[in-house]
Image (cartoon, rainbow, N blue to C red; front, top):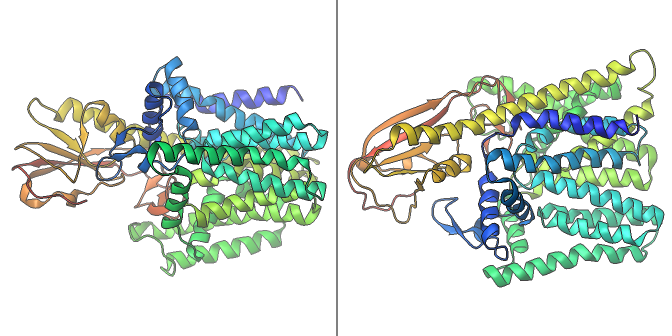
Length: 547
């Protein structure tokens, strides 16, 4: 079984993700694909192009808040496999495989049940849905886990070569997503806790520091400002701290690392379940009463249902943090310190430091929660007795079912934007009629692929009969941005999205990619149609339109 377990996990990953290879590019995917195409032509200048991602054309270096390693990976994959959705999603199967197999091999150092840790990571909705994007997040987690595994092996075996490779992987991790630099203090504190002193190993932690400093100077020379500092300024200027943000962070942690909730009846006492349920239920009640700052865009008729879901997810988030603290109290060793700081640090960053709470920020904690779950079950002896299989299989199956459902719902949402762009091309576009659009994400990618241009609010020139297409569910899209004086008619294009779950819906309070839409990473309920306002203009617009 030792040799079979990684094969089983690899087959499960492929079985779960292969059906979504054709998923349309979604949310920030276009930024990474465009950067990849830029790198394919100009490898030394990854962000040296202009993009309209807000209301006017800007330099990509001013828009992106991520380092370029994932885009370099896309450039390599695109050059070899092509630039289709299936080709690039296929290339990103490799990082997903690396996360699951890396979790398995890392978990072998912490528990006798590494297969469970790998399976729990795969069954987490936050991981599975994130693995169907071509953004940097899963790739960053893969490098994080590999770097951690080699660092622990290097310290234990006194192998400087392993420590050096780990230092290189930490650098690559941080150059994939800036959060990767959190590995530096994490492994420093782990090493001090393990060795009880600072040793020569600390030299290898300077490798990623040097890489980040070099990247900062390189980007400053290219773009006039260092992009590491720019990303930090962006996060600080848009974040907030408060009780509501803590609850949202718990909600995203519980919903994305769902096994912490589905295993709760197995791993916690009745007293613990009652206590956690009471706290979560109180939070849900406060939200339903309007005592907390739930976004006003949530439909009033949905609030009670969403409050119940919010209470469940908060309970799951409490359970995830409790796993880390309970493990540390029980063991009080370097391994428990590592897992505690890994989970707690990720949750604090996702809740209070990042510019928004989203599944992508919670993602790094999922493998650690899965390892802690396996350690907890092992300590409780849950693998003994007549119901040992049911204690594991049922909670895993429930979480996996939700994860697959969520991933399918997100794919349906992404595909609807591609269908909308195709409808514009096939039914609305006519010779002599200029078609432009507002909104971004995947809709922008496909509209631009059909040679339509996003509106530049600084310089708008239209002719009689021109069309503007405005998605309801997108960023920087607002029908009221077009003055009534130049509107000849308005129509609505509605595309049904039948999934029974939503990932990005203000009405349902779900904001998988940003809590600006609501306090839930996803919500259960009939998905609403995706609406696109089609505005026909009647006169040249000489006034400057404002978003």
